[in-house]
Image (tube, rainbow, N blue to C red; front, side, top):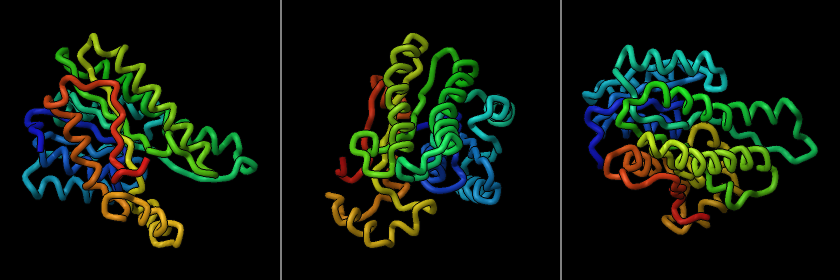
Length: 248
């Protein structure tokens, strides 16, 4: 695994699932890690404990990534507790599926505020806090942007915006030596979709996954994020890497 010793990482939405796996993976590679959470303090504390019991450095910081004041405080607390951040993983997000007839203004704003506005606000703060030598921003997307299925219109389109944001910001921030990339997980077994994983539809999707015929796990996603966060990926920006077991 890549060496992140001396680096400071912020992982949004890291109290469970893919975010928790990423936070632990970054810490294992040597980074000091901020485990951001919106509501699950217990989950965030659990992740911090797992990291510190293995000799790593980590703290939990609450914050709603769709609120500018919370995002600003997240970065300030990071710098105060662990030092200047140079890795940002925009993992916080929500997914709610509904047919077009059931889409409301509230549902639209809820998904777009977290999934799109959130990464914009955190990236703005990264510009203010990253060191002069730059850093790495990794956005967590989804393979659904390339192959959406019925009822995923809001979610897939919000993550499609993140794909485009990655391409645009990779060019805009390159002069500051800030790299911006996306990791797009496939079907992943997390707490948020436990019921679907065991359903007949879920089993069919798992069987259609070329590698292993199974759902992915957070630890299947983490190594790609760790690589992109490291100096080993110094020549990569504006990329979208699928971590999906071969599903596209």
